[in-house]
Length: 217
Image (cartoon, rainbow, N blue to C red; front, top):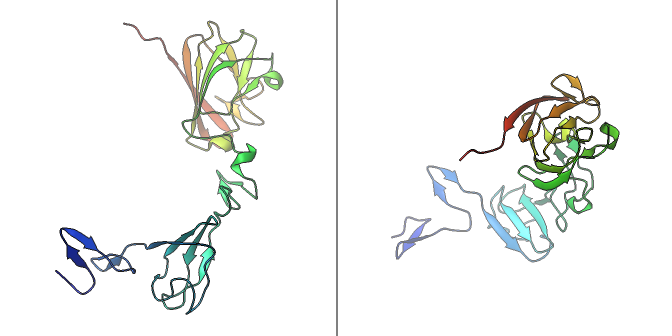
């Protein structure tokens, strides 16, 4: 069956280069190309790629047609290079030209760290946490850990800390951040066999809740 722009063969649909139309709408077209594209009426995918079409190349790089179908202009995305992020922001912080491989970006939702040791006797000497879910298995009542900066976690984000030590330890906040309105340098105490949920309730402010982690059978 042929409708003028869609053909059907053995139960499968074949669509033209310009995408699939349904109810007057058009799906985003995605193309692949070897090397950087060229622009204009004789350029890459001229007469084929509609405005807004996406082009992925083997450089690797990512482009989008910001002009017409007959004369594409392939504008490079901010995501270019071998796994690098060259511009934009994360939680309001400028990325600049830093790549994830440098370790500058350590916070990832659902990231975990197990078997940690609480250290130091104040915030300056405490263990700095970099993951969302953290299990502390070694430490004394005088030792502690420091939460990631609230600006890194973001408002509404949460850091989980499991106390599997056998005694309490301190949880500090970084910089000018507070925990339950208490100065970060003072911190709060997380009891033994507790899971602490530290929520960023507002910029620069954590709220905490503690739960018993032991499961009775």
